Amino acid sequence: MNAIQLLTKAGQIVDELARLGPSTPAELAKVVAEPRPSVYRILTALEQISVVRQAGEGRLELGIGLLRWSDAAVEAFVDKGELRRQLRWVREQLGMNVFFCVPHEHGVLSLDQVEGAVVDMLDLGPGRMLPRFAGAAPRALLAFESPDVQDSVCAGAPFGRLASGTPTTAQDLRELLDNTVARGWSVDDSEVVEGVASVAVPVRRDDGGAAGAIAVAGLRESVLAQEDVAGQVLTVAAEALAAAMARAQSTGPRSDSAHNRTAQPSETRAPALIVKAGALMEALARERIATSTRLTEILDEPVSSVYRMLATLSEIGWVEQIGHRGAYRVGGRLLSLSGELTRRLDIRRAAGPVLRAIHEATGETTFMCVRHGTRAVCIERVDGIRVNSRVLRLGRSLPLHVGAAPRALLAFEDRAAWDEYASAALSEDLLHMGSRSTLYAELDEIRSLGFALSDNTVTPGIAAVGAPIFDHRGEVAASLSVSGLRDGVLTQPAHGRSVTDLVLWGAAELSRYLGFDVARLSEAPRSSASNGLPS
Image 1 (spheres, helix red, strand yellow):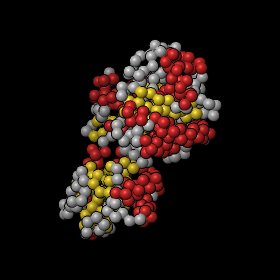
Image 2 (tube, helix red, strand yellow):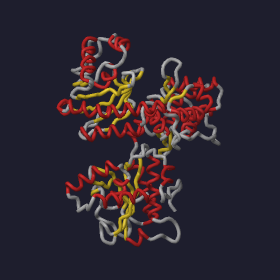
Image 3 (spheres, one colour):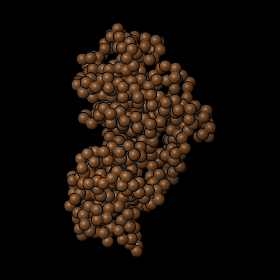
Image 4 (cartoon, helix red, strand yellow):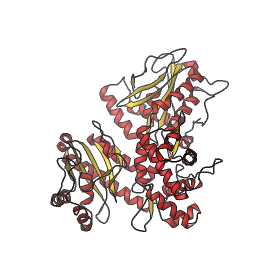
């Protein structure tokens, strides 16, 4: 197998892991029809660049490097933080699924999605490709394309019928495009999926074209009843995204630590080309958009080698060239791969060994919570050997301002989330929450410390420590907590780690599992995150 075939085979192995889920090297060797030694060497290199990782019991799964590269694919178009803020804001206003997409050579590519309050739209997730002739979002893009582009799409008529409302003729499509231009947004009713409707607004460039589209989708009765309101809300978000996309075009490469990494040589016989390809992907992720000349400078590799890697990475969808002989960006295939990874992440499974390790070190009750509305729900728990609080048993919940684990969830969300919770809590009279200013002062202190402490506030004689668990975007996904008698939880031991240190360690381990860059935790005043087991 030559060098280029090796890189192609690596892409095939990653695709199979996305399809099959956690697999052994022997299983992968069978499906890709390669000898086991060759597959072992490829997997070693892919693990070295964080594209795959160990999943336990001799199996491997997709790695968190894909999440970094997926974020870079979004960053090539728009600041991902601003995009998430606008998507969440629209969801808060309308309660629907919200997604953002951009034109792509193979159709219309979804870059990100925030799920709605009622139903999930699986076909709108990051990396999904939509047809150019059907649906509100593709039409919002096409309506503001040049006449030549519109003619090329219409030339594909008659179009296949996807659902009862699909436009099948060029005349039908042109009429819908005219309506979109006239009103400023587009609407579809059962064009792509039967019973599903959507509203989309283009994100306009300075030249009048559409750089992207932001849209909502849901059950047709709900969407069509709010069509005008949805159009107005989406227009506000589209204007904010247009400004953000304009800024992204003028900014340089990022300097955050998550992207300033290069795979180091391994003592194993990992194929060097795959490691070099990983370095190229990291460089491209850092640059957002880069020419082959720029990548050659960064990698200090021969021009011919960089060209060959780019050509092969383009074939497997990991990079995309912008126009003929243009610059490169991270490819849309990484969005699909990261979507498969996040879909398969099982934080409860990952939490089991961590909770047990902390329990063995302390003997106290150890548990994990997630947010559900205004409450924190216990989804995993290991009972203590001396005393067990009955307040947060498995499946039970507490308001987000009560106790260590719930407050660790709330404190590390943004100020808008605090405001939203405070309003809801006061309206529901949740356990006499007290003043908003008092709550915010407590949450600020928790953020400063990096953990939440509860001492006699839920159960007399019981104390607890809670810390947030972050996902790869830096958003709070869950919290980990230990509770027990005050002396056992609050006392600093003469030897070994305190309960607080162990809670921070466990939260960091689970954040790492979800793809969070745990180096960011070192910015907190108290962070005892460690790569080792608790002692």
